[in-house]
Image 1: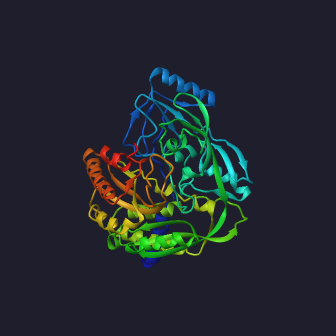
Image 2: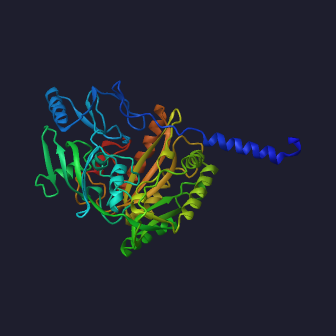
Image 3: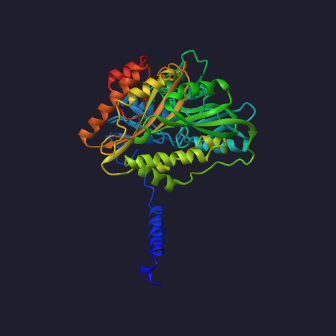
Length: 459
């Protein structure tokens, strides 16, 4: 065959070859966390530190001995799960790191009382697998299932559910190893109020050994999606909450130049009054395709517009699909891995009162660029979740009903690039505070101490 006379054939071969190459690019993972050399870092890689030692405790007696020995030696102890925190929370300089991943057993499941007792080093995925045969699901967890129970509770994480309050409020009791090395059982009625300090306390008040969590049914939901203008969102959301037909909800806001912070999509999980009896947990799907799309958007400019168009098509395609509660709580995450040398992707989350959202978004437009193609600091995604007023924990970020803006951003790691990113994020934080909001603490510490104290007056 004369390929010169068959350009379509040659073009097809090139396209197929390129697709095969792209499909076989390995999904690299950022190297972070605990190491045998005692040099550790957070997820960003921006906070390397040398600790005295890393300990994998085999049982509770070991943990007590470690804590008491550290007290005798005047050492600080920190607690590590899967080390996804982005602010160096899981280590101190010359301190002792307790790796809790070996504490991962399911201790007790009561299907009639709808409770489960589980050790703090277990992942939410392991809990979901244990619940699956019983048609049960967690009341509140993060939108991904890859984190540990102890880690999520220590940062008082929240997710997509808009009916059950904070994650901390779903814990009936816990077993805690105190800073003095004592093991104690703590309930919600505990007069010393340990829970309000431990949950959202970042390991400062002891080591969570196990918790008893309240459960609910693994309901079947139907997904409903809709495009909105950002100015329409507060009234839309207020109506959504009051109607009581939606169990879970989140939204995506455009950061594409052509519709920058003016357009958004909402994704609702509505009750169907049905249960799914197939009982399966979905695995990650379309990782490579999602990663290719996200990598395009990471370039900014017209490619960010293309990425938003692709997101809109995907969101539209899932409208009217059915999904179980457990599967709605295990979103894909591997495609987000980012390992480009000299650059880092980080998260920040800003909470703002529901009623202040529209004016807040207009002010945010003055801080970040609509087209950041040629800027070092880039914003790739803003996801919105609801955080109901938290009257329980001490370091509470939701002092009233809040909308949390989860922001995925990227910048370089040179000193001047980090300084520039810090300046932008601090201005963003000031605007958040001016609107009665707060920011979330698990992430890299761009904010000033004064901004921290204003956000968390009970510090």
